[in-house]
Image (cartoon, rainbow, N blue to C red):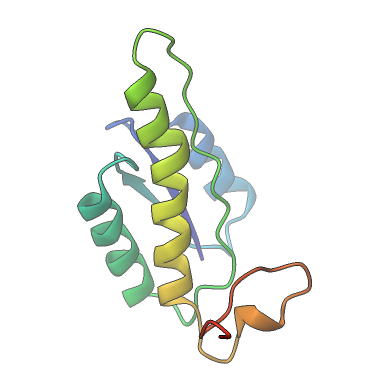
Length: 111
């Protein structure tokens, strides 16, 4: 299963091409503003209801507009962090992030 998330209300043509090429894979398109945490959360909740487990998330949203630096930070930084946190929340519990080499995540801080 693959979820493709983009701001565009119209599904990009590449998604249809992927469906043709990878016909054994379920591909769902979501129109979401990743800078809006509520919309992103609804997207995750909808997608994970129909799959066995959330195994991989690739955060690659990005914009560049020097006239709107706040929006750049909201999409490029906050959207990426928000998506990552939701993915960690939805991951299979049998996949502990703290055991990944090079990962700085811990369930509980050590004092």
